[in-house]
Length: 306
Length: 239
Image 1 (cartoon, each protein chain N blue to C red):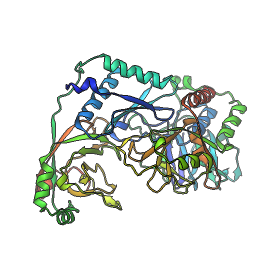
Image 2 (cartoon, rainbow over the protein chains, first blue to last red; image 1 turned 90 degrees about the vertical axis):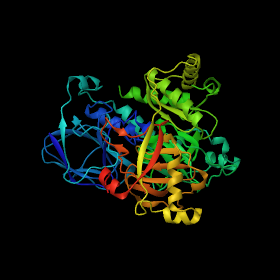
Image 3 (spheres, each protein chain N blue to C red; image 1 turned 120 degrees about the horizontal axis):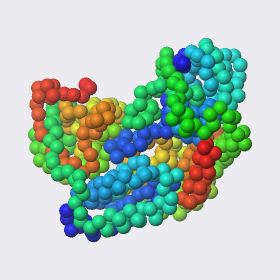
């Protein structure tokens, strides 16, 4: 079984849950940008939730299936077309040998996932198949390997249908919310009073200048109480760095491991997919939350996949 | 191990919902680095389930954790500090002797593309800059920016020089640079704003999982000058 890229997209990669244990030597963790959509797609086809998956941005790659396969498309809606027929998302779909898959237009969201039932065969580096520098290219071909018994056991669903109410909940959570929550960071109190009030009251949108390293936010210009420099410390996924320009950049999967800009907060993990999928034409608000809330929601959503 | 060991007052803060940061007063100091290395090594040996990454930096140590495995992170963190403090001044079993890593550098002007400008601005000859750069033993404060990039200090005030206001699009692998009081080596071709004074033929980062980064936090580094001919003979980096 295999799948081939007919035509490469602009920034499509193979991702899994990421590469941990090497950030102390400067190696970014990488991994899915919108982990909720990726996990959802994986469990719908019957894969373990953390299986490798194709992560697509628009204009996205086109694919040809070399054998009959089961696939699922989740995350951003790029209007997927199988041969010449538009197909549904978030559902397990049977495709036949020589079927082709294209994506027509970026209707909703920014990051789309293509899950294929089975393990995508690609070389692993430091315990992860996540692409760091490379991307998938025209003519690349990936074998799809049937899960062995042990991996099959980790898959929650085998061949049962995934509950549609959970799909709806996840879709609503990611795409129907204009509230993105964060926990104040070490330099939150270094912000001017006016800036703090602006963050909490004014709307933001994502800059076109956003990628797997970070999303730049457009909104009110923010200032520190006084100009200050900081010794670099570790940053993490979701860290909100205040740039000298007064803009905020939210760090994403490929972020540098340490940073020297003011760390004013961290977007909580359950809300990161919302930000990932926010296009620059929709506004959102940033609201404060706390660790306990963030943990309980994260655990609840992970429960949905098991 | 110094008496300061028991005097360091570790504090802890949550870094969002999946990281904890331990920190000491913000300063660039080899003694602080020594303490961070001790705490780092202690946590590594604890092999705590649910800790995905342990990231040291100048004055902090950050743990990335799995939300499903660590409850009440601040309680967990304070217990960890307590356990660490409680062990007293015990030498950690696998503590390596801090040997000095010698790194050859070719300070040829074709590699050290900022040497001429630095020389005129600092009012020092290129020979003097090289002499001063190779005199100090540098400590690795942390790694970051890109895989294997080590921030080292402290550079003599005589040759400290600010970063370029606009980073270069492409700095060659092995390039040795200065940024203020710090010095470092670019492990691979990349954009970069540091003042480039030379190039090492040594491979600083290797994708081979058995090799990876040449340096780690707390290492001590000394540079020594080599000729262009020696560089060509030794070079392991992509030109």
